[in-house]
Length: 636
Image (cartoon, rainbow, N blue to C red):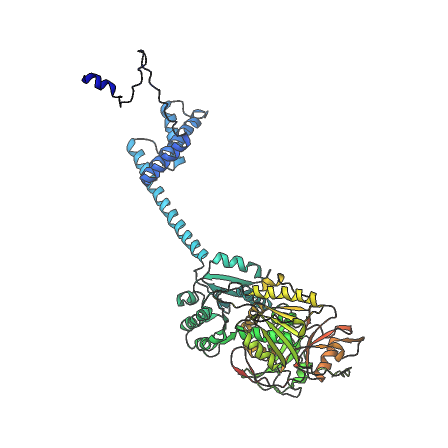
């Protein structure tokens, strides 16, 4: 009964597979994995040998040399018809050949003699190897030090540039051009930047076929140790530039303090520095010490913009006036100046244009009265090709000036629209107001202003500094909107646009009546000018004032009738009779000015020709102006 019950319950076991029929057992054959090739094996062996150290390397090198030199030496001996006939003689010849090849002496004879010969050869080889290693290491370290730019500069009278920014290539190029005019000199750049990278950025600035040298050294300008390597005490001038980084003005202040620590309080070094924000000007001047010049870049940019609004078409004239290509301002002090009148001296400059005088205390007087007498220590400010301009001992006979065709009336009050805003905006509005221009700011918060309702448009760059990597971007966008508005309204308004980077000038969508003012480049040019002569700082202070004597554009027909054939010297005399100093002209239909042309150059003066004059603005009173360096200068 139990068996029957068990048989009725289904089995829970998995049925077994049927066994195969009996026969020989077949096992799968495992194929061996392919081994690495010969090249990986050799590379692995070399790696293991290198890990073992110098001893293993020397041993394997010796075996390899013997394995190559011995068979080849034996082949040379056995194939030589003059070789010994005996086996012992051939073996000795092979040994000599191997010894001479490996510098092991090659002595033959008793074993002790051969061992001593090999020992001396090894000592000699070890000495030469150590000597070569020491010399190679010293040269390598020296070359690495030169590549890092940490060697000492031994120069005298060089111009030292501290810091790196977008203005550095322009400043260095102008300083090199100034040294090239003198025929010799050196410009040294110290910045916390790779030396090779600095040299690549400045290579194109080096004038060809001159004795001027460009030296780049790496180091922090705020580090007295790095400053001592570029010998600032022996420099003819030191230029401190603000870097393109947050806290640039603080770095300038620290660099000035480090410079005073290295040079000493009694050091007679001409120092020119620049700050980006006028709020840090007083601190930088305290750190620079007496006698140093600290320029306010913001104030300079605002002044130049005001000048271009008051005198449309002046942007290229200012750039040509500030660079070292062609004519630039110089202060001449030849013998015989004291006691002579300014009018006589202005007529005694055959190859330059006199624009004013500088008193012995540094006070400038642009376009003074012809009866002004120069005192001892005074200098004559001229526009000339270089500092070797001629001042004749006696003035030539005066040339009667032609009577002007019509007097120039004072301009009516103008209205200007300011697009964009930055920290220079307040100074711009102040300067325009002093020049008689009513400015309206469009900050973009309300309805867009109509440019055609104004006499002039000023486009400011955007805010710069930390968090604003592209300050020229808003200015480029504003210029696009101006062009679109001009097409819609059919009226093109004169405009001047500020660009902090001169490389964006080719990208700017400027219209036919739009001037692009690269304030960053112009500031760099001014810094280079002042570095050559600190007395020019006060002269430029007066020249870039909104009122008083500045650079003016006057129609040439205000001085000669249209169609008159006359020399440029004739117009210089005519401008002097009207209270101005002519420094150049711009032909009709051209945008490029000609500064300080030959006074004997004659041409037919037509309507549309512009005479460039240093003189007062029509209807503007002469008054003290705030200088670029932050001090008060009386320009008259």
